[in-house]
Length: 81
Picture 1 (cartoon, helix red, strand yellow):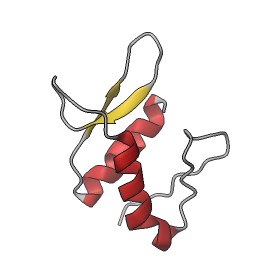
Picture 2 (cartoon, helix red, strand yellow):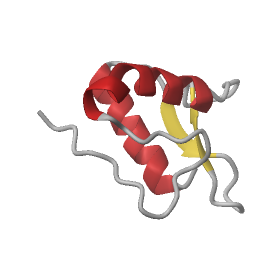
Picture 3 (cartoon, rainbow, N blue to C red):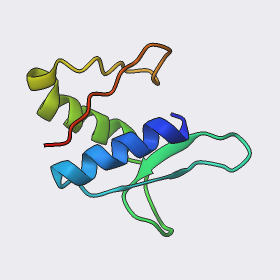
């Protein structure tokens, strides 16, 4: 996922009270992921987190959470309450 979608996912996690942080996989590639903690050793939990978010919000908001990374036209709803 790119930085923008990683930050949106991290914001959603924060609002839902889920642990984890968004961080670059490698500076060279520009790819980002969700990890269980800021510092090493850390584990990538991107798939788990997106599944939990899909489960918690998918039914209420009809989110189009694809298994692949976000594509052109993907809209992330404003979750502010």
